[in-house]
Image 1 (cartoon, helix red, strand yellow):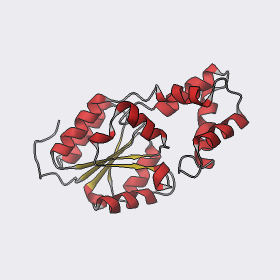
Image 2 (cartoon, rainbow, N blue to C red):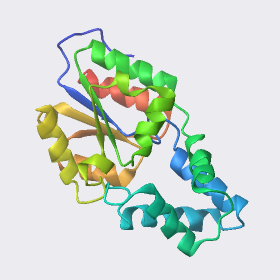
Image 3 (cartoon, rainbow, N blue to C red):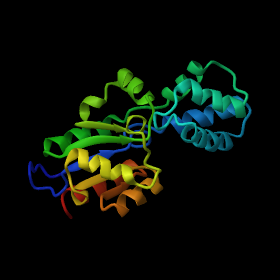
Image 4 (cartoon, one colour):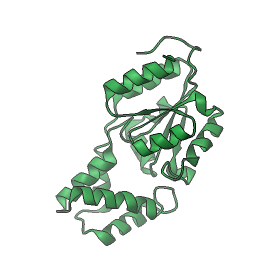
Length: 210
């Protein structure tokens, strides 16, 4: 996939989104399923909950999970406990083993790797289940950073400063096109993740400087 070159790449840091890149997008898939099971238009439910999790402060660690579900239930009548609903989301975050193998290859080339995710404390619970943090040098989570990738792109500067890597030596991978545009505007190399084949092709080109 990549050259076996310990020092040659101009890329010094690779940042990966979690849901939709490292794992299947469990948040979206779970919400669509919950909406359908409760007789709610799945797309409407998903869009509404995305707004709620941001507006209520849970995404950026300013509110807890109980508050989040309270706000959701103010708008929608849902069957099951909060834990039941959370489990429906968690079960759909399927880790992509092949992606973690690529992360290991990057680290073998002395490229730093990190997660940069708009997640809540759910990310810690998912790691307790699937043990994927160990593949990364750092984990940057909106819940602890108190800011999101959606808020103007300032988060990229924070991460680059923490990792002591200039934007031109960093790569960011995300399945959200808006996030990709913000990162690119900050000078990072980017890959808009769509599928495995195109991702691997673009990664090889960027890391090997082709």
